[in-house]
Length: 73
Image 1 (cartoon, one colour):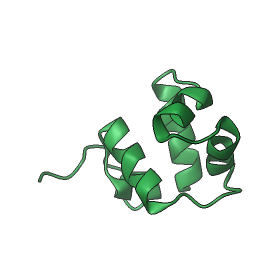
Image 2 (cartoon, helix red, strand yellow; image 1 turned 90 degrees about the horizontal axis):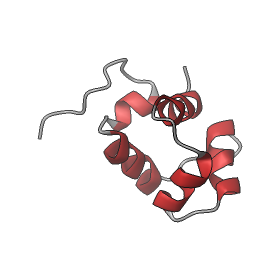
Image 3 (tube, rainbow, N blue to C red; image 1 turned 45 degrees about the vertical axis):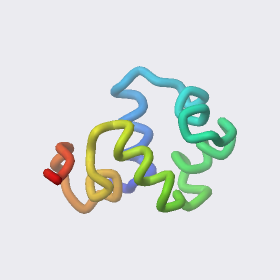
Image 4 (cartoon, rainbow, N blue to C red; image 1 turned 90 degrees about the vertical axis):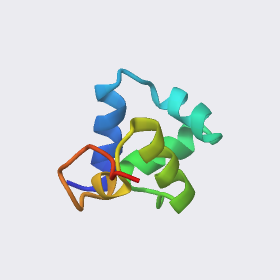
């Protein structure tokens, strides 16, 4: 599973619209849509913001683990 699929599934699991995530990330809905479609690389700061928003780890979003829980600090 790619990170693009993961961010779409996280959004859908939380019953959110692309527009809502775009507002949170301070980008356009089109830019966010391109992240989900894999047409645009996800910048590090956006990846971190998404992990924080969903209370998960960047490794989960990147597909490096199947564990959704964030790491303990």
